Image 1 (cartoon, rainbow, N blue to C red):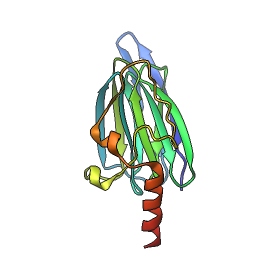
Image 2: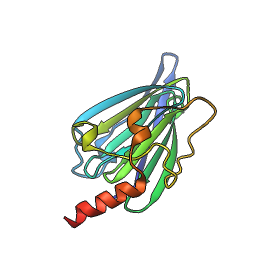
Image 3: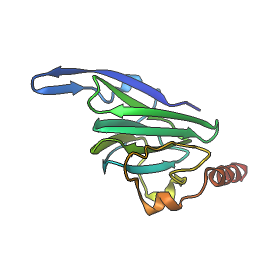
Image 4: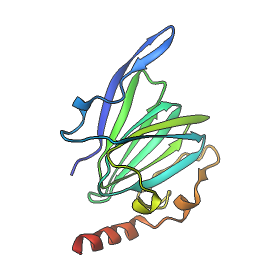
Length: 172
């Protein structure tokens, strides 16, 4: 199993704007192939997640605005928190391996969350989903503005329930 991998790439700024690398095959584990790119646009306060599964790698980048990304490894009980800022002088991307949940909150007036997937997305029923504010994960979402959360993320199971489900699947 892997931990989250943080990739840093310098940005080149000039009068027209900036240019930078998000993905370089030399930065990811051998044999990792991405098959789909997705973009999520959100408004300030929106919280998405916690979602994941046991097979999909995700390379996550904030290309506009600012987000708080929280990852949680359900096998190691390890949480990581990152601030990804589309205007930072260095592009920070996070490579999230299978078995690690991820959730994020838009901290700016709006943001664009870009991610590459190693598996095709086949709907919410094929993903793990944990309550967006699970006390065991303790994401400490920003409360400076109204939090906007989907019904799915508000009514998802607890982290403990997910761990019990995953353990039962491993025994079968």
